[in-house]
Length: 146
Figure (tube, helix red, strand yellow):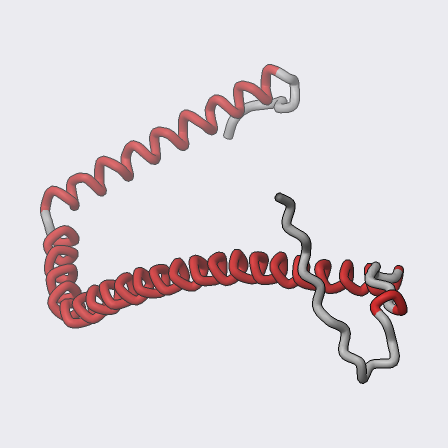
């Protein structure tokens, strides 16, 4: 046995009949529905894009915080060593002055300076002699050496 659809009685106060209504959506209604769906899709895409951008910005902020923390640590260490160097400066200057005076007054240094002066004189004499011979070979020098 087949069941029949139950029909709802139409109210008598209405002047219109069900046959007076077009239950198919019109072109503008379809367009409106399509626009509503597109707006939902755009909103979802925008939300996804904004979430990705938010995540990217969050990562950048965290990286910048870590970088600033490292820089602060390095600056603290550098400042410590600068203060330490400034505190040690008088002692280092005094020590350097003492070592320099010992080097300047040492007999070994005096002997070394004499040897260096002698070698310098010999090197200059040999260079002058080689230059004179080269000029004489090219014929640029005539006469006797004074």
